[in-house]
Image 1 (cartoon, helix red, strand yellow):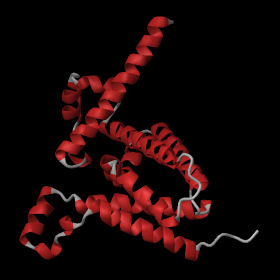
Image 2 (spheres, rainbow, N blue to C red):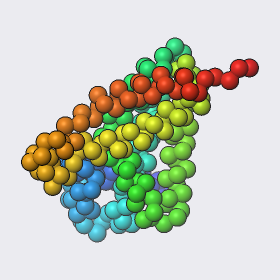
Image 3 (tube, rainbow, N blue to C red):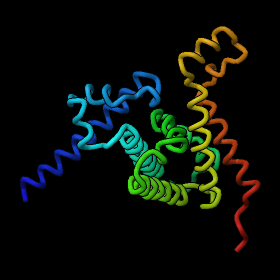
Image 4 (cartoon, one colour):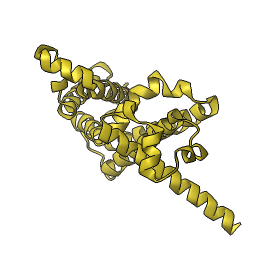
Amino acid sequence: MQQRARSVEDKARRSEELLASAEAVARERGGVRFVTLAAVTERAGLHRTGVRRYYASKEELLLALAEDGWRRWSETVRSRTMGRTDMAPEETGALLADTLAELPVFCDLLTHVTLSLEGDVPKERARQYKTRSFAAHDTLVAALDVASSLTAEQLRALVAAALSFAGSFWQVSHPTPTLAALYEEVPEWGHVALDFAPRLRLLLRSTALGLVMVLPPEES
């Protein structure tokens, strides 16, 4: 039993090391689109085929990284709202923007999860991702529901906007090398100039204020 426990712990630790390596490679190479299993296993100190014992494919590895991003985002929001009951709408929007900007690889993954990763893994792996990401989402909203003056309905809409803005803006503000070169030639197309974190903060603060107007609390 003790040997089995150590084996489970070793596997969990190695899985975490692979996730950390995948995130590091994504940061170094400019996005998850450039992540390869070879680069991840090399950084983690594993043989190229060794990763298959933990993740059956690159898609499963990246989906696990997105799942971990959900956990980290939820935990950060809960930590920073602990003991609060007076957060104004614009402060709530700023908090979501700031905590997302601290997780750039997660922001990058938001687009890839929807476009391909969920559909390129077995159904049960997709089910696990959905289960855990929705649980993290609900925990995050519950924490904000206590801390913020926004209603639960307003918060769910604000979080949906945060995810959409973060995923889209990250891609626009981190173009591929081909697009970056093109924007240098044609500056007026230069979406590369988009400043991700400040723009995300501005729009989420504005969205939070707008939701107060269009989704007022129901009268009891």
